[in-house]
Length: 589
Image (cartoon, rainbow, N blue to C red; front, side, top):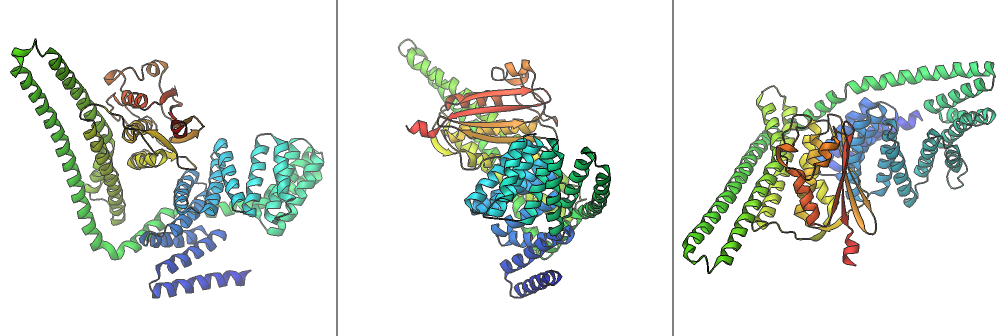
């Protein structure tokens, strides 16, 4: 085994040197990735992280999505080993997004399984069960017997924790008696799981029997955690059965392995302390030879930002001038035809109605644009304030500029989107329905608010397994959900969550935007869609100012697109908005 390990390191290092010599980038990432995986298995997380970051940086440079997806999943496993479950989930969501683009269902199955482990540690039982089932479904599709066994073991563990022993026994037994696939490590987990089930049912003799089988296989595979768990069940079962001498013997052995695990955990925690430092060192190394080019890119990016902001202001000013001139023309027409009022009264009434509708449309357009631009521009300005302090290092400047570029790009796209829609609405609100991908539209909205959520340390989650389509006006739906996501982030405290999910039936597509923020009182909830302005507006958790018009627009656009909207909220618990659209298939029928 030691010789095989030495050969792995030697071959991977040789492959990296040769690939670097001939400037074969893909070969370098593959060799570095193999080294990162090897040291992860050996629990040397610091070395694993060092090679992982180098491989990931080269993958970014050559746009290698496959390598990036693999390394992102490995980084999530390192976070899991260090009990950093929320960062682990964030990396897994990124890996899932990349593997969906690559259509790599085998890696997707592994991503979902790891996501289930993180959810279990965070005591999110519904998410744990959901992701295990999703992983198992893909594993069956891919004929991945090992992952099927792992998923069945975790389902057994899930049902045992819920006190549903019969279902737990079924899944554990399916692993042990599987004629297609046998694995000592998974069988050890299953036998110890059966022992826990029978212990909970006070069948101590059966618990002892299964625990001994689990211990035997764990010792064979030399897996410390499984040995420790089997010894723990033996100690508790013998004690419950009144066999104190045997209970004491296994308690002593259990403590020895527990101390060993504690030492291992201490090493993992020490490794965690150097995580950010190593990442910064790696970034500095990869960027060292690109300083001059990056300065030019930074200048260009600042020019793009200034040009985008200037263009936006000119367009908004142009809309205002256009509306003012239109009102003046209408007024002049009325003055010129004042002597013909009796003969043309019906024409004057029509013109007055158009003028009022134009004013209402203008007010709504400016409210929408101002409301949607406030958050991204606030983030950009905050980033520039940090940049002007002069206390930032080169790596931190690079990171901030990258975020500014992403935010400007997303904001520019949003401005183009809003102004295109505004131009089509100059004569009044119009609804132009068509079938489009709502889940893709939601990804665009999330990209705009990702920095705002990150700054508030909010986990912004978008859950879907396949593209979701609806039949509605894309622009009005965009503004509708942009308001809901912005409000959810606004009223959620730091380290909170905002989750977007879907439910589909033959007649409806139901979208949920849910947060665990400050919630609303029953009085405010009853006024939600009927009042606007200061009467309903509330400051956010970081004192973000609101206009009080967003939810009235949400209700109006939902009605225009034949969708129903409902809301549930409790103070200090959170709020959930649910929008139900007609299913496009029922529309076509």
